[in-house]
Image (cartoon, rainbow, N blue to C red):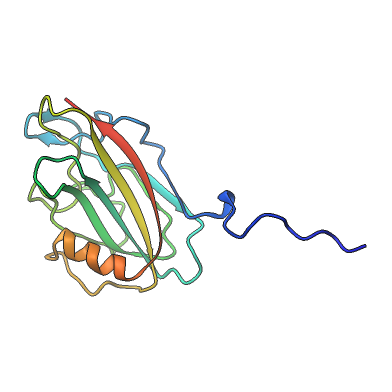
Length: 175
C-alpha cells in the first residue's frame, strides 16, 4: 500500500513567510524609543528575523510605519532596501544611526524625523496608543534601482511592484 500523501496544503502555517523579533513584544520598550522630541529612548532598531521566503526571492525591504501619526499620511520610522536574499536576520541596532549590522549593499533612506536610518516611536503626548508596523517584503528583484535620496513612498511603490510576499509584526506605544 502506498504511503499517504502529505495532507497539509502548501500554504500550511509552518511554511509561510514569517517575521519574528527577540526585541519586540506587544509594547515598545526604552530600547526602541526615539531619543529626542520629548522622548528619552535608546533609538535602537529591533532585532528582526524572517524565514520561509518564497522561491524566487532576490532581495528584501524592511519598513517601520506608524499609521496613527497625526500627519495625515502616517509616519515613516525606518526604510531599508536592497537587503540580499541570503540575509535573514538583522541584529538589534542595525538600522540605528552610527551602528553596524546592515549588509554593505543595504540602503537606508531618510525617516520622517529627517534623519537617515531608524528613528524610534515617539507619539504626541496624550494621543493614545499608536500602532507600529514592521514589515519585511520579499522581492523578485536584486535591487530596486533607487538610492538613499529616495522617499519612503517611492521605495514603497517600487517594493510593492516587485513583492512576492510580505510579513509584518505590530507593536504599540503611547505617552
